[in-house]
Amino acid sequence: MGIDVAAAWDQVIAAISAAFPAFNVQAGEDPSEDAIATPAILVDLVEIEPTEERDPTTGEIAALMRFEARVLRSYREPRARRVVASDAAALAAFLHNERLGVRWGAAQVFTVAPDEFNPRADQYRAWLVEWAHLANIGDQVDQGDGQAASEVLSSFAPDIGSGNEDDYDTVAP
Image (cartoon, rainbow, N blue to C red; front, side):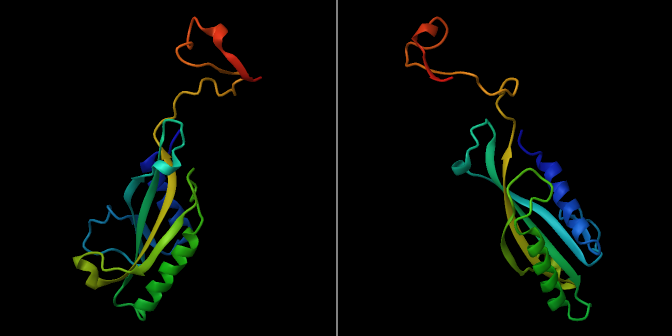
């Protein structure tokens, strides 16, 4: 069975929170207050990009789950630009090749850069960390009772299906 997208996003936030306990870590969609308590890490799932190259052939769809984290420090903090750059680098190092407790591929970090994330950005020094995980989404096609096939048979159309059992050849015992 593929991942539950909402549960995976929650797990990403929980894993980052555990690794960075001094930070206010939350989903980027959650901040509704005028001021965000800093230091903060705002995590967003920004894209689910289907990828045909990695078709799991299970009925699920393979997709790159693209995340962004905005690492924030107050502009009033001494050396805020240097500190937030260091924070972003630490987050990128933490994410590198991590699965964060979710059954998907290891993280591939591809951006660590300054970010002016919204009109309120003048209150913060912000850096953006972007990464992706390869994941399967959706339900698997029913594979029966989970047991491997004990016999593999082969035939050619139109001599297939019920009533043509004698036309099948054994491929593997």
